[in-house]
Length: 253
Image 1: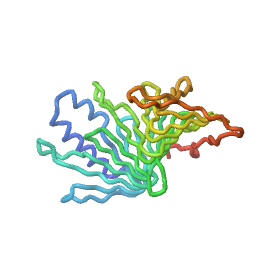
Image 2: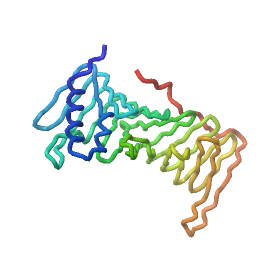
Image 3: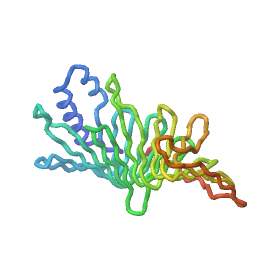
Image 4: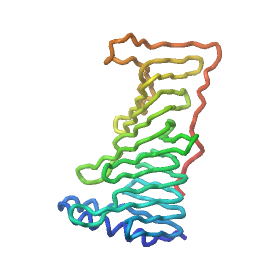
């Protein structure tokens, strides 16, 4: 049976202190506090203003969840002298679950509450994996940007991937240097030395756009440079490798 520890109480209290110092409308956010619970308890250092939760840790903020083996919470005093949590680090077997079916795995996740951003980082030799529906995105680093709406609820704004990007679907494998996924527009844009592999065909260009709704991908040249950057198509006598990179099923425990 899961133990919802005193860590949960600490989180709720510090969030309440922070909200009490803001406008009346900000109090609505207290309905969805940051919640961290763990199986094996926690250890707090009052001087350093840190707490460590261990054992099947779950971090929740509204509809978003992160699961990990261990988590550290860091607190600070705001302008009114009240304690508030401003940073959470999840470590080992990190799994992120979004409201619209987005999932991600990493070895380290840093949630900066001031910036509304989650940084996903891999261990040496690994990559971060994000997927939605039939699309799988691999990269050296992934940054999940959340946005606070007028009703003070958080919404996924965009996912930014940097370094050795691979986007896989059942029909193709697209490679590039960087990528941006904007869930609201249903678009993924890949930039930098783009290669799109489809059966016996490989397309090369400056950037590619993938529409998650229509399943159509397009390789294009940049319009903001004066150099001659053409889009090229290579037709091979044998099938180009385009294996689907989707990991085994990821479910909430």
